[in-house]
Every structure is written in structure tokens, then in C-alpha cells.
Image (cartoon, rainbow, N blue to C red):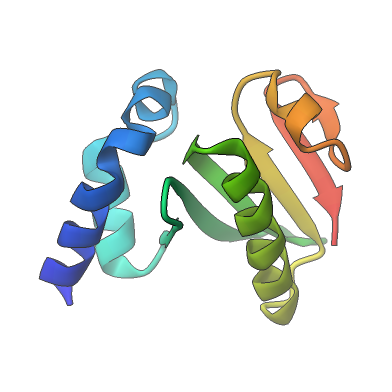
Length: 120
């Protein structure tokens, strides 16, 4: 299992490393540990990748897209798949962390600085 996760990460690492370099909450080791422990989930497409986690707050369960990289159209399709899965996990919100430009790409989200949010 660990080798499979490590291999999957290294196949898409190049898509996420620039975003990871500006991420203040996680470094690469944190991501690998999170994936290995099941706290984080890695979603991959042909040319894109997204790292997510489910966060339970007192009043709401949220799927957070912590790090995203790759081809925009594919990311948009992946986001829909993640949102559908998140609903089955009881999430009521989806959040994407990133640059302000994501607001234009994910037009059904609201811009909260570097966080965009969508009710599921």
C-alpha cells in the first residue's frame, strides 16, 4: 500500500510541487504522511492532481482541496467528481485553496481571498 501511494505521488508530483512550495500549511513530507495515514486523499487525472482532506467542524463537514495542479478543464471535471464523493461522505461545503485566479476558473465558487467555497 505505501509503495503504491508513494509511486502515485511521484507520478503526479511535478503537477503539484509549485503550489506546494507556496503552501503554508503543508510540506511534501506532511502530504506523504497524510496520504499514508489516510488523512489525505490524492485524486489524479491524466494531466492533473488534487490533494484533499475531509475536515469536521462543529457545525459542518468540509472537503478541502489543499493542493491542485494541472490542466484547468480536467481539474474542473475532477472537482465535480470530488464534490459528488464528498456529498456521500456527509460534506456540506467544498473549499479550494489557491491563487485568486481560481475564482475565474471555478465560477460557481465565491472568492474568499485565496479560498473559494461552494455549498454542496
